[in-house]
Image (cartoon, rainbow, N blue to C red; front, side):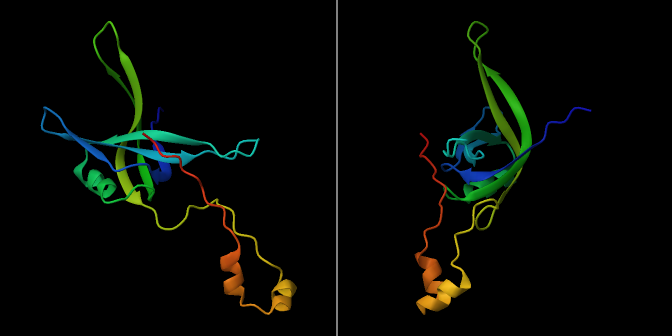
Length: 145
């Protein structure tokens, strides 16, 4: 049996755009930035995935989010063909049926390093203050244009 199911969890790259159609429907478009697994050379790569919806409730959820907010969407992969028969343009996108914001950080990010208990006791400092001084790895998102 054929299946066309997509689940994406990533960050909203920019505010959603709305495009009224001649039919009276409204097409809402946005992009989700999804990180790939770490590249063997240590670089973190990401994909910018185009998403659309015709559903007003789903569009309202996406419009309520700010750029770089985490979002989870489900939908179907689509290939759309535009233009005259002499010069067709093919575009691939996810037609989203549901969207919901994700709270906090995504699973899979490494935990910040912790000092062993004897080292904490030897410093005499408050563990919470020390933990705040340890740099955390923050995923980098390149601006899209």
